[in-house]
Image (cartoon, rainbow, N blue to C red; front, side):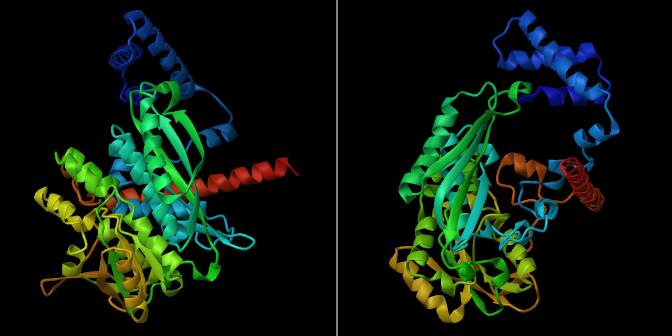
Length: 453
């Protein structure tokens, strides 16, 4: 895929001449478009003209402030955004800060929880959204299946019953429309298996005419309700002394990606199930969420990321017993990860993690096992130290998240898991840009308010 507009801006910054930029655009266009040389040149000139207008246009200071944005001098790559590690969590905390406008919520972005929640007239409305795995653009059914299952999980683990799904599809200009249909087929499969309908959506191109190629990006959201508001499961309710229960996990989009790009595509079959949803339905039907302090799915940055984020949110510590954890990871998936040299504790396994008082553990375990769901206690919540620790072969190790999630493809291994040497500088500039975004919002709010009074 080629971002023609971005390419022009970058080449201009590198002091390329107009002729050189047009030549490069023509080369990119001819890769994807079946155009004559003359047509390709004409399109390149049109794209250049539009972009050049935005680069050089003169406007008032007020309008310029609206159209421009504060630069972090840090890229998505630099901060590992989407890679579910230290950098990603840092950016998400800043996004949460920007989104906080003082409107009361039960679970807002600052909670850094799996889903958000607001109080309705009678019920609590729970909302979640998940983006499609970026490496599954050529495998849309798998992408659709797993992102739908993921967003439903995020609603379920708040103790809510999912009622509806929605989706947003973006396919680049040269993408085959069949990708849209195959992706929707993945959503449809989960929808029919769970009885939760897809009720709304939007379909657009990636970047309109300015982006050529076949890349597919999308998301699926879910909406649910909790009938008993005070029973909503939230990470802040985790307490010292809680048992940590885990259900069997076989992975989702991340494991499917690992299998496909690791040359073991048959492992993808292991990920196609609705066991997580079945487990949550069992807990709802047995009214067991009232005995659960919190629940989460093993996704963000693996068990390393999830446990440490919960420790920060709830101000607790955890002891995790690796032998117990290993026994509940799908053996085919675990073997693949070990054969490929991937840290299974640093990638998404999609297990259900339940935090509950020890007096309720056996009842919850019994209910899940009666529903033919493998599960067990993998650890306990402690008062101090306020961090996650892994007990392995009698040795205690710190279960810390890396800067990025465990590298599960060759490209990710090339990029690495270590933080950049100038991490602190990048983070400081990023935090400053986030503050500027808040100031900009407040300024525009004031302008609009004054005009409309």
